[in-house]
Length: 273
Image 1 (cartoon, rainbow, N blue to C red):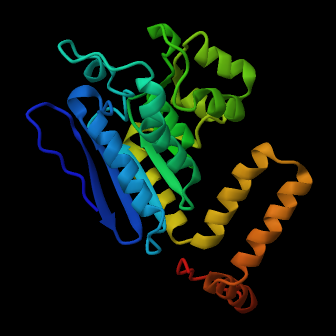
Image 2: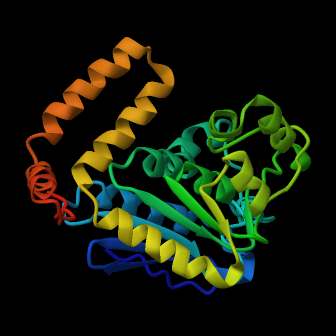
């Protein structure tokens, strides 16, 4: 699973590393604050699609190289002078299979996803962090949705993610006024999981990933799916979905281990199966 890019331009790369049950993804384009190029987005989609069907994986960690997490999509590269103007409808045809697909995969993959954020998380980069199950950020990190400040409408799931995480008023504060939110406020609002000192970020992210990777992976994935399903379902529909998920999770080895550990009054040793 590798997507190393070789280009005379600084298109960057998505560095992919397997560390036991943990898939580590690094946005590697620090000269552009890790803004996602077309090739990086394509690699992201391919890597997450493959990870979704890899039974040996148990957690995903996403971080940025250098001082920033991600400055969004690379619109400068998209609109470079000298390139032929794309035909009408280009964004509508292309983006659902590119940037939007990254957000969908992070949100829906049945593996826990953690983001570790330093510096700027902007636009698509901000929404990438918000789509993760847990985002841990350095206390001086900044989350910014600058779409309207750049003269175009909302993108990459911001209109769906923000209101659900922080409510309409704060969502409008970020989306319509374009106000930047530091990590401490983001944690207080419930926008992210936790803000820590910059020196503690790596350890906090690693501890969280280790905790998730040692959990009952199938049950975690089903619980994640049920939580998201419940955002647009009735109580009765949600409980029905929970029953089907319960039927599946009760057939796992981790369920049997959980019961045995309870009876024996010890910590369970889940294997993700």
